[in-house]
Structure formats: C-alpha cells, structure tokens
Length: 336
Image 1 (cartoon, rainbow, N blue to C red):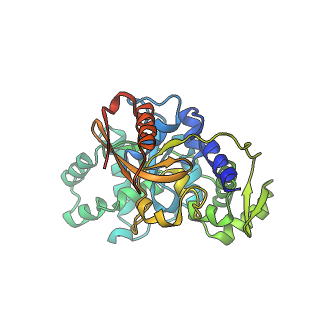
Image 2 (tube, rainbow, N blue to C red; image 1 turned 90 degrees about the horizontal axis):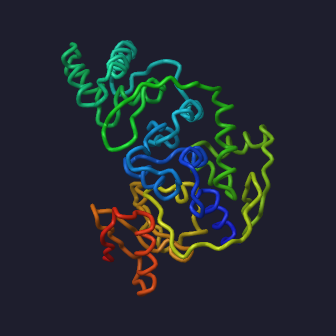
Image 3 (tube, rainbow, N blue to C red; image 1 turned 180 degrees about the horizontal axis):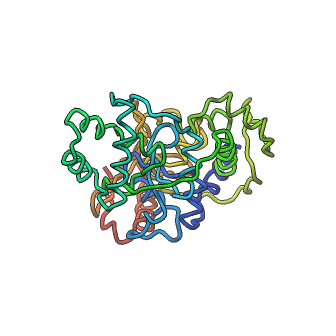
C-alpha cells in the first residue's frame, strides 16, 4: 500500500512526468522559497518549460502557508493571502505605531512602482525622505518589518530569485473560508492520498478546521484506510506504475513538506538527516523508493552526502540522474 501511495504522490507532484511551469506552481500550492534557489530547482526538476533566464516570470514571492516564503503564481497570490488571512487594521508589530504604517506603506509602494525596487535602495530613499533612524530600523527589520506587513496585505511582493527586490501587486482577495475551501481542494487533488493531519501540517490550518471545511464543502473525497489511518484523495489514484530508481528533490520539496507522516518515502532512522531541529529541509535524493542521500550544488560540482555507504551501481545511478537534471551546469559529481 505504501508503494501505491508513493507512486501517487510522485505522479501528482510532477516528479514522474514533467509539465508546464504554471501547472507545477498551481498544483504544488506554490514553491517554498525560504532559500531563494529552491523554487528554481523545483521547477528545473519538474517543468518542461524551465528556462534559467525566465523561470521567474509570472511568479512572485510572499509569506503564505505556515508563515514562510513561497514563490507563487501572481494570479494565485490573492487566493493564498486570503486563505492565510489578511488583517483589517494595521497593528503595532515590529514596535511601529499603527498610525505611521499606512503613510510609510503608501510611500514605499509608490517608490517601488517608480522603479526603486531593491531593499537597500528603498532604505536609502526612506532615510533621505525623512524617516527617523529608529523608525527606519523597524521598517526594514531583519525579519521583515513593515515590508513584510505590506507583502502580507498584497501591496507588494518579493521578486523570485536571490536579489532582494520588490514588485507592486494588486491581488484579488477572497472570503477567507472560500479561499481555504479552494486550498483544500487543490491539496487533496495533488497531495492525496493524505490524512487530515497531513493537510493541516502543510497548510498550517487547524486539523479540526480542515475536517469541518471538508464536511461543509462536500468535497467528493475518496478514502482509503491503512494501518488504522484514513487517507483521502480527490481524483483517481494512478495505477501502480514504475518508480524510477533515482529522483532528485529540492530543499523544502513539496513531497517532504506535504506530509506529516513521511513513512511512504523516509525511514524513521533517517529523519534527522533530512530535516534539522530548526525546520530546515535539505535537498535530497530518492534512491530506489527511499530517501538515502543529500545533495548540494557548489558551482559546477554536485556534492552528494549519502546516509550510509552506497554501492558503485547506486553512485552511477545518482551521477547519471544529476547530469540529466542539471545538464551542463554540473561538471563533476562528488561523493563525500
């Protein structure tokens, strides 16, 4: 049964057959972007139309599920912000007077619209425009500041990629409950079979709210019971096809983040090798249906850290797949 679950996940999350970038970003409910290159690698692994120079087009980065940064389709920004919840009034977060926030938010948004898009340039413009030093430090706080509050309201968003650059946005916001209903529909469409706990873990919604919304919306979910747990899915499960011997996953990959219970692809003893106590999820390699190694790109080298010694054949599988995924970007695969 776990192998059937794994095959369904790999198929639905576009790890067995690539599709276009828009479909990938929509089905995966965005691409986790706490580290700026992760969305790029996720698309490089999954998208037929991935292009090194244009992969960011049509995407923006904002804080969505679980309070973390995600690269999402600009057309989906309103959906995800609404599902997370947009506050009606400005608050005093970051130690900023709520009465000051709308004024400086309007100024910042105007400067971004006029072409001052880099964070460092915005800070200098604000200082030159009379923003007091103690306010400046709070607006440009290291954990987000007023700029983060503006992102959470849909006024601006980060441009995807490594440059700290902003764009203005005008997302269409929805009723929070309706937005969450659509998020649940997409989740069980792409991540099923999954438990209600898995869904709550991925979205950051409370489990009882997930259960209530599923019941209220009448989503035509189908269920499978396995080892006392009920798993739900929205579309027909793919048949038990062939799972490739080697697949690369990016850091914070949706396959890993999508499930609280990762037993379909991860052995209990290897959990701490995939994630840290601080929540970092490493780029990993699925080797013969189990996560068995981490990878790191270092310029033209790909560094592989196995969880335990690999055979010569396993190393060859990984090296061949690395060149298939990264092409000419990789000149050498090094096993540590």
